[in-house]
Length: 135
Length: 101
Image (tube, rainbow over all chains, first blue to last red; front, top):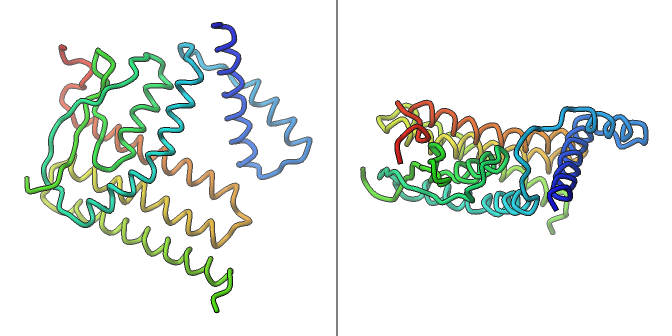
């Protein structure tokens, strides 16, 4: 099971690297595709802790879904004064994988009303929040 | 009768304008009296969301440049968001992770 997870994760990594390569070169000829695959395989494998691909893909999906929310919050901040600040806690998945922590911090900080301030020992995140009202 | 190219130009102009509004609105508070972290909140509107709108507007104007523009969109959103996080963490005297539970 762990081997399958690692394989799927590796394939996802290769796909991501190949995608960036194709965007950078904007050339989908067979030769360039070959060079891209070669490069993607040759780059060092990350030593991150093995993580369930489902968790990563789920978080990527959440990030995409957070984009409209981010714009909604931006419009809220534009239309009403948000002057009250407070510290809060946002629960996390508890995974120690650097990729998962990266995605969770990204998800929190992407929306303009919350900024992640760090990961607490129990896996949740301390966040700085803005709320409607006067300071 | 509005043709499709006119509509696309109109939408892209609108996105560029909206991005500019986000930029100005988010950058202006930097000069004010708000706290450092509050300024970062509004800066993320300018940096991340405003820039993204501008790049999407450009994407509609120059569709043949889509590979580079989408790469720019991805890097802008990821970089600006993470930079905001790094600046926020740097402002703490003690990072959250070091604090006792």
